[in-house]
Picture 1 (cartoon, one colour):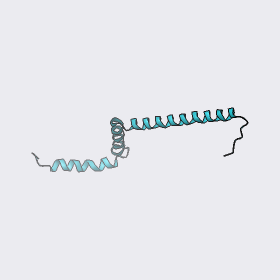
Picture 2: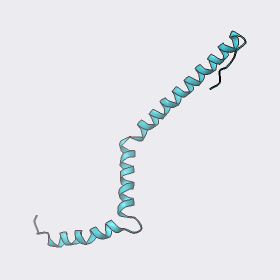
Picture 3: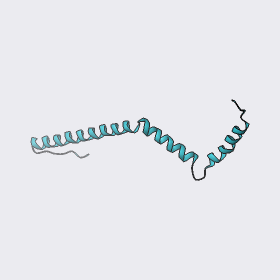
Length: 84
């Protein structure tokens, strides 16, 4: 970073004011980012993301896990004793 040279106190004051405003903008961006992160962790958003993950895993185009589970589930139902 190159050292700046000022010829008057007014230039220094202007630079300090600019830096102060830039600092406030950065702070507000950070606050907004934290708020958006909090909002993304609501129950409905988390549940939706989990549901999407399960859906993409079990009902993918290849359907490998689902195709493996269907015979096991059918066998379990057929071997299940009535009344249990």
